[in-house]
Amino acid sequence: MRKFVILGATLLICVVLPCTFGQAGEDVALKAGFARVEITCPVGIPLIGSWGKPSESVLDPLYARAMVLGDGHSTIAIVSADLLYAPHDEIVGPVRSLIRERCEIAEENVLICATHTHSGPEVFTRSKIPADGRLDPSLIDQTYLHALRERIADAVCTAHGDMRAAAVGFARGYLPEVVFNRRPIGTDAKAKMTLSVSAEIAAGRTIRIDGEGNTRVAFARLGESGLRFGPVDADVCVLRVEDAAGKMMGSMINFGCHPVCVYPYAATAISADFPGDACAVIEGVEGGTCLFALAPAGNLVPYQRGLAEHQQIGRAIAGEAIKRLQFVPTESSVSLAAEIKRIHLPLKKQKVDEGAECIETEMQVLRIGEIYLLGLPGEILVEIGLEIKKKAGIEKLVVISLSNDAIGYVCHAAAYEEGGYEPGSGTELAKGSGEVMIAEALDLLRRMKAR
Image (cartoon, rainbow, N blue to C red; front, top):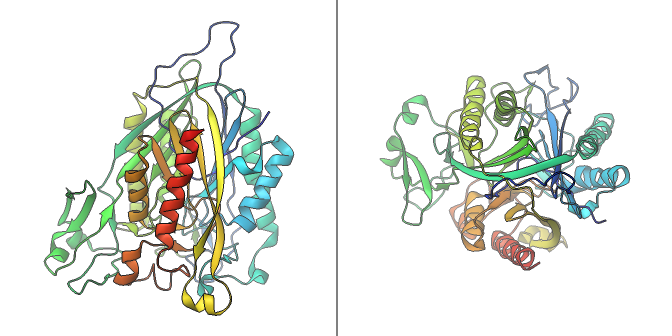
């Protein structure tokens, strides 16, 4: 029997049919299992936000959360880990191998994503992102890295061993109040990087829908100076998985916003940032295990940061998700499928001059009935995610960034003309790489729809 696995950091599923469990003596098509394991790094390991300083405290724990689904023919597993990245060579490849050996789930059917907390451990060389962001292998705590791989695999195998009859459903919420696009464009047509705003400026926040249907969050005071704010993706996608009695087994939420509330205010504190708060609130209210999957958010940030704000934003996301979870129609008869596509993205001229014209990475799609989960590598600018969603023609499409690899920022072509951090020092990918990713993603989704 072929088995499909999805590992990742936040996920959503859309199924809107009545819940129909089998009669006595009949086989129920869908089975599901969930697990959560702690992966908090030892105090002393440097964090992404500590500028090389050793971590000094644990603000809140880090977890790997797993969901495993089976339809009687195929099995898929999804893991969401409270990490900055999920590099292929250091995390995804080794963990997939462990899962195959222990749970007999095919490696190519495992999706692993990171929640992108900036208060997590620096244990990756990050070989596919710009050189100034890489870490010397000698500085990596190999003992923790080994344990991290083992624990992520443990989460999947524990969930796999606890599978039972289930039904799944999807809902979509809307939460524009906590996020904005950090690349406003000035009168000179250049990006003016705006990582946060003061409370005074935040008081003049406006939210509107533009002529193309995109949500735009702006600030009156900054608008007066000629700044034009780009779009956000304010969707909160929610997946509900319940048992035969209708009791919550687990859930998944998908939302796009950089988890940078704790960083840099508590630079040496270990924290899952607001994704951890969101999952903890949902687990406390609804029960079960909740996964967080980050939507494309390379240029989306919380409009205010701080230790109190990471809890407020987490609760706001959880509140929207909990509201949507209440009335989700679920379905127990769904088929599962998964596919990985290897892609090549062009590199900037200086890398070509060094003899490297492109990098190889992967994208992945998981299908749960009518729900499509698209896993993309890297920090994807929101414009790319929105373009895929508009052109795919799939109502229940969930786009998950930072899946299965770490390749730096992936930007649309206009961003290279506008300048700023993401298309500049934030990536080694050349102009046009974002459009390649869009085309490859749409092709992969078309192929999955045709299966």
